[in-house]
Image (cartoon, rainbow, N blue to C red; front, side, top):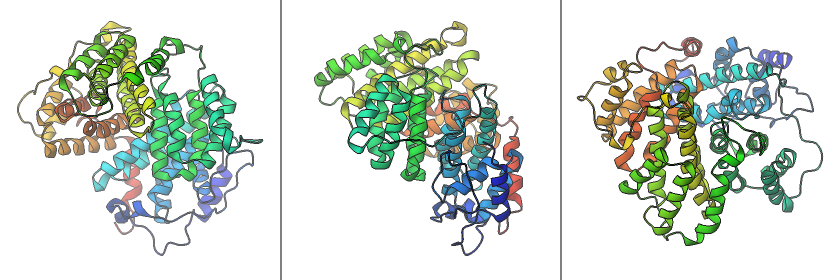
Length: 524
């Protein structure tokens, strides 16, 4: 969307907060005080076409400024706005909403990664050392500008979210309308129903209706579940008041492809969803009383990882269902297996299977978030089965060319080499990943050493990454390592090195611009 005139007006006057009493300094931001700023923006000079989605008055000027600023000027613009009093949270929200308004959610991937990555960038900001805390925001801004340009050049045309017209379903019918629309793949009804719900229901309530539909369709390598989880988590950060356009975009993404289209070798009926629905119907009432417990069981986990590795997705789901009915596996053991299977695939993958294996890890992360957030027990059981099935589907798709998967068993990993300085570990990335993984595995049970590794991994990722999946992969593992049983945590930490920047990689142009923009900050 071209808003150059709007952007020029905002640049001239400054997106300004009249409540602030002094400029926010670089030290404030790197020290963390600005992360808590409650200040709101004035509407300023911004004007938008009345047929476009208009965001809340405190956000519209900043969203318009982000949309209109040329990519090469964005780092300086971000610094200038924060000096004027814009908080980290405000800018993060505006950046997320700019992606929602400017990037087509169909298909849910490609340019849409500028929306998916916002949660990952925020998490890495929270985990980063103080001197790197702002860098993910600069990266996400630059990534949006790339996505905005990519979307504008799309053969389908330059997408901009438009305002809904006409009457929305009333409060009593909106939930049933959404359910029916999702089941019948009706985009117009779904978009209108979820807009109505966003205005009347809580986030927990609305997402309770959506978790299943994010997890039903693996096509386009898991992005529907990834989007659902990251939309939920980002809205928790920026506030439910911004939910309506986000949920409209999410529902459109979930309903893309329809029932017949084949994507990445799968049609809707080729997946595990229909069979898992039947399993939930037939077996939920027979589940062992402790099926939802999250206590690990190494024997059960080993067996389930092997089933995901060697059986068909349907066979693996059937095996897990039988175990959970008999009480020989609970949810904790199954989810340990899901995370280990996703990490193993990343460690096995080569060439054309590499990107799919990264999505296996980020999809497992999204599905696990949905499982933890869902309140309905049937939905949680279905999500567990879908996670097992999806990991099998990722493995099957990756094995379409057998040479792209090497033999490897993550549950049989052993420590490699001697205790090694962190600098030597990162010197071996990406040249000798197995050796690096063995060294990381050796330190994986030592919490202090693990933290030192992740701090170094963050520094390398933030300084050197020019591709969005480095952010998403590291963020997923930072969240998921503490969720698996302690015995398996070293395995998960070791898998980090298989999509990580090393000491020999160059710093990215984006980070060079960001550091240059911050270098002259007053009060540093």
